[in-house]
Amino acid sequence: MRKQIKVGDRIKFKAATRDRYRMATRVVRGFDNQGRPLVGYAGWRDFIVHRHEIIEVLKPR
Image (tube, rainbow, N blue to C red; front, side):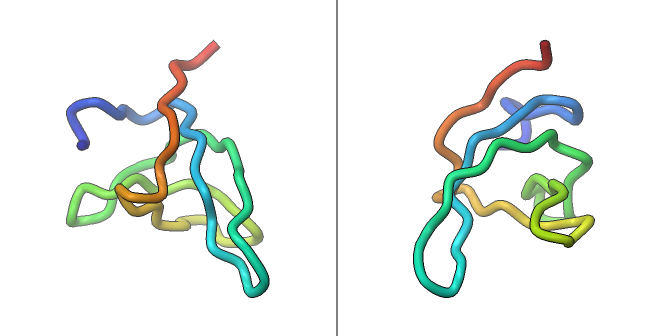
């Protein structure tokens, strides 16, 4: 998965919240030690996005 996503790419993903899944698009800030992308989301600086949550990978503008 990491080979397809690079730091600076935007990813569209579904993020689990208390009442439902919300769609969000965020810029990849880095990767954790297992290769999962880290983004800023809902006050978390390093929110981990799992493979099954990724909907689309968007290249930077």
